[in-house]
Image (cartoon, rainbow, N blue to C red; front, side, top):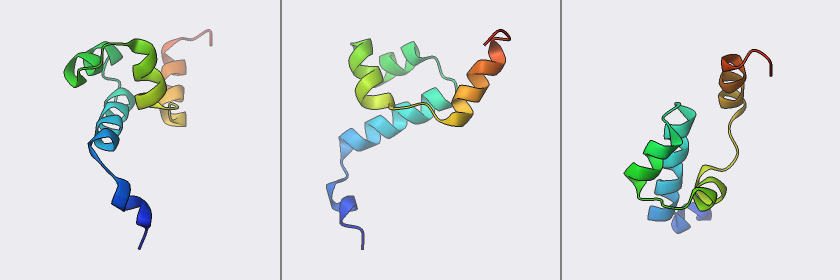
Length: 66
């Protein structure tokens, strides 16, 4: 059994929820509003983590000069 699951809590669910919404291209401002986040820097640093390679690729496709 993986002991890491014994430390799983609401904070982890909130972070996962925010990450999944942003990866599905929901506007981060909406995610912040829906999830009750107020500070962009904290939201970005602590809840979103790094964007997946797929999300980065989708973003680059939207801007031809990148």
